Length: 256
Image (tube, rainbow, N blue to C red):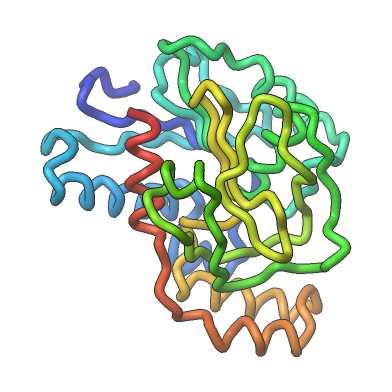
């Protein structure tokens, strides 16, 4: 049963993929990983005295690949979409349904806000008529410092966002009705927000720590996904400082 405590932050996590086996074994599946990130953001807000001390993150996973969606959309404060090994531009039935679902979510104040992470960011791009495809630049991998636009500095409350990246698909341009929040040389659209402040997305992975990313790189280098050169370059910065807690705190504030 969904928490009815109005202090709680109720998040429906749309599961679009599965962590690689070493990550799942050591750190848990996506609901555990995302809950950990969001709990850290919540604790940061509590330490600042900017959110009720009794608030908790209530998160439930819905595997949309298996057609599992919330019965009542309005039970939730936010919908958050995970990353995926699938391509957001693919026409698999579950991906097409997810695109239509995201497009049809009401934009009223009582409806849940929408947050997209990596694949989720790309699904939002597709849902609102941006082109999504593989990047001509190949993989953007590991620790990355994104530059924030003026709107991004206001939203993310900083001048840069340091985050782990794991993608070769990108959203080209900014969909109508959205503003760009962050960018890199590799990927122009690193983060965006809808003009009505109901939808926000991030291309990178705030839920990935350096330790998680290390396991991903090792696993995908061993199976031939990443070249030895790309792997070695990414490993050099794997433990650089991240802004994950700040990003998680801002996402909770966004939901609120």
